[in-house]
Length: 419
Image (cartoon, rainbow, N blue to C red):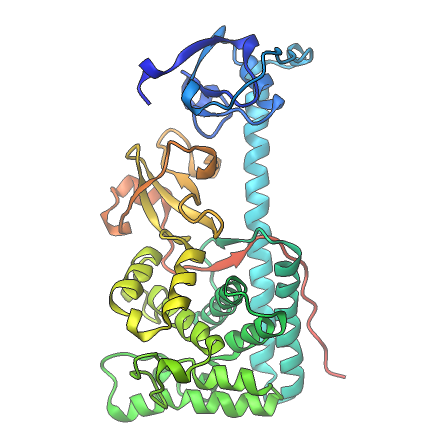
């Protein structure tokens, strides 16, 4: 906004709903940006502690306001403005670190359960199924108890590639199933199928567990055999027919180019379409060779522009709506030309994700996550490949080599034990 479109207002006349501009340096105030709509009395009290007599505000971006003056906090003199700013900033940093640590902890917990499932298949297949169901049901409890679920990018994770892929497919497939309006029992089955869809690969030599163009025909045939091997393992575990079908069809494509049965769209049920799409998406973002990885934004664009005949049209539409045009892990440039990385996306507001903005004056450990819904005048201008970022920006934002997802909220998963 041009400065001529703003007005000056006395600090004591601020109200909740005023859209204000603070003409101060970043470290001179505790807010993520220096312009925002006032949401609470606490924000007014903080602004009054900054030592300003007046601030600029934008009438066009402000809510309709009452004429009653806001009360002045009588306790502001009890603490210095500088100390208050530091304390508030540190509190925000602690809160977002704790949230990320909690998501990381729960992902690692899920990875441990997945490892337990795969390592116990030969010993007790039915126990492996119990642990898969327990893990997925724990996730499902979160989906049911919180309508407002965000897809969260985690810190660089050291989980083995197969584990990371299986958990990514589980999480994203369950979220897409919920977005698609499927019933709870189907969502749980989709979660179990996502967890087990590549289970047949544990019977294969490591060199053929991931497809590559240099494979001989014999190696390709061996690689494709993981589908039938997986179905047989699922039968031994006691998986129901729908889970077995999703494992059998997780490489089938709507145009008939998939394998092993070359089915067409009309022959592939929606739960199987969901697993197939999420499997393809995550393989683009997280291939066995990280040097072949593309960004989440590029993967979304590629699926929509060049691969959409391979998937159900409605399923693709819902997936893009859920992930947003700029999925977690995307590096972007904002409309004010600053660079940022997308940290989490809520399907209710896909164009306004949570981001971390590059700021050379702020250490990355002290950078606040910004919710773009709080800043209607600020949005994403374009996605940008990590390799195209200036070196200082790349080093600061540290784009992940592998996209690792989880969702907000959760509780401890206790594996079942053999009797």
